[in-house]
Image (cartoon, rainbow, N blue to C red; front, side, top):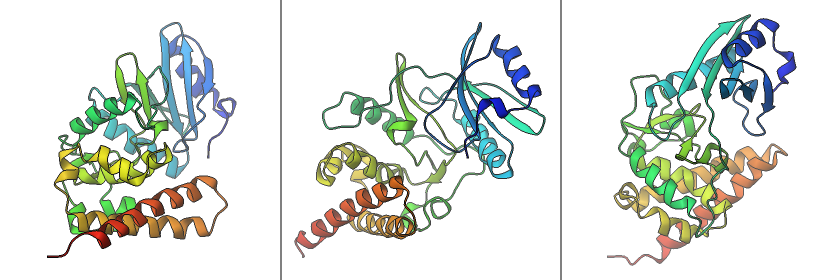
Length: 265
């Protein structure tokens, strides 16, 4: 659960201020993997700071730190520094200045995302402990296994269009899987941005990983993912869960119609 910056121990805020040369804090408005997430500005510039002190929060942030250090590519923000004080793990990330990506049909940001996906599809998983497909998604299929680094959460909130290109942030849920899994997990976000499932698939088919995936495997993934979010949303009033249930069910219904209309040999 996100908490206010003012609740941090003085030992932490002093250390951050010493590193940045000031302490003008702007809390983040999205994400919840760390208790603290904020842009901090000082005389040395801006840094995006995440901090955690609960067992779950520290494990999640330490995981994100290890993955981010291992990725260190042109599409991932650099780690500026990290320290521990007063029971808190604190990480300073490169500040990414710019709007969140627009994934709507015809948006120029889709080209940036497409280029990033091509790079990621060739990125081997780093030598750190990553989620398996089943641990991340709750279901599995032999075709989901692989050795590729998969971010797994490429929604607009984690895509920032900077003057230096697209930056992908928040690697807290990264997994090791087949590259097509990243594309399948992107589907709900494309639908949420205004694509029909058919339009989204027409865009994704530009990626070789999608072209090489057995349609029956895509059918399976779409169905299982929709079932998962239908179950999750049934027991909550959280709007984002109901949204994901809607978007994943739209794709599953499309795949069902597609498979039923395919000619049989």
